[in-house]
Length: 450
Image 1 (cartoon, helix red, strand yellow):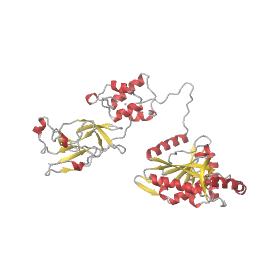
Image 2 (cartoon, one colour; image 1 turned 135 degrees about the vertical axis):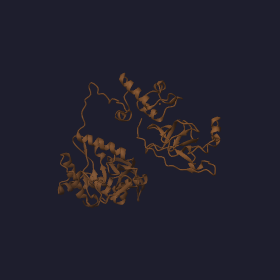
Image 3 (cartoon, rainbow, N blue to C red; image 1 turned 180 degrees about the vertical axis):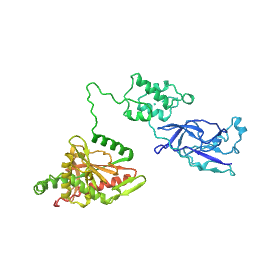
Image 4 (tube, rainbow, N blue to C red; image 1 turned 90 degrees about the horizontal axis):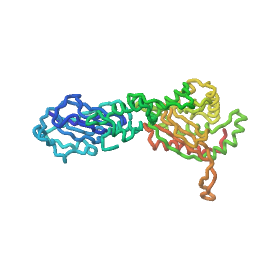
């Protein structure tokens, strides 16, 4: 004979808690292996939880309506019923005094008081449920139903009037799907909040996409735009995006470039932009912080030994391509300027090879060239970071001088926006890295040659 803790099962990687909708058994009742034991709800799914072992329900540790952390105990199961006073249960009394019950959300499983001669067998319980996504009165609504109602603009009055087919008239996912189908058929479909595609997959019904008006023009995405669309969504789903921002004083760079760009063009035929200078600073920072020059493979981290910087290039048709400067840390400024010019020119005429647009370990995008002061770019997989360079602007700034102390001066400022993958890059590293890039830009040597 043994007592076994029944734990709130795992409902998917991002789900941390679940609400008990109803117990399908009573204390003292027998339950068979895999027989439905209770019904729970999360913000993603409503589901029945099966019993992990046959036996008798000795005690419920949580009641209907309780919100329980994943992995917390919710009931005690007796394998043979020897520990249960069935006669007492039949008289309508609880197995244990209500005051001795455990607060599940705060008390760990080890605080459960069991008689000294009894033994609790711990049992792992992980039941993967397919991830699905989806307003309030005194009537109970599961988190999933609430989410669907909110995103499909179902009013509270509509919810309250909805006939529920669940236990005690509870509104289920099927009920709300039937309501949406009926509303669609009646022609009163309110525009969905950007989830038409997800509704088809997750609600099992077809919610129409926005209908073009009489004067609207509908065009199909081209092949490149479809690829960009898919990859950006994929990156958002894969990487946990976090952003850090640093303002850098690039007055020295602006001054130096103005001084040398004519000579550089005369000698090399290249119009020097700011991008090669940014790449140079970025490559130095990546050498200082090699854990920004990595990729993720499941739970493995791949530390890249080559610093290959992708540079986003806007194409005439409005699309985007990212040529890659290999071993950028080994190239001088002239070599970087030549490559940037060459790649940008050939990218716009669709002349880059597969080799030239693959293999990046970090990405740079210059949103400032289009007038943006900052941006929050999406990471290019399998990189874990991307840096957006904002527009350079003249700003009043307090600077410290040896002769006059603090003075107010007009300086050339820009914002560096760093997006990074929080799965492997925490705020400390992400912030220090972009700060280091800013430091290299601010300390640019105006006396240097090309």
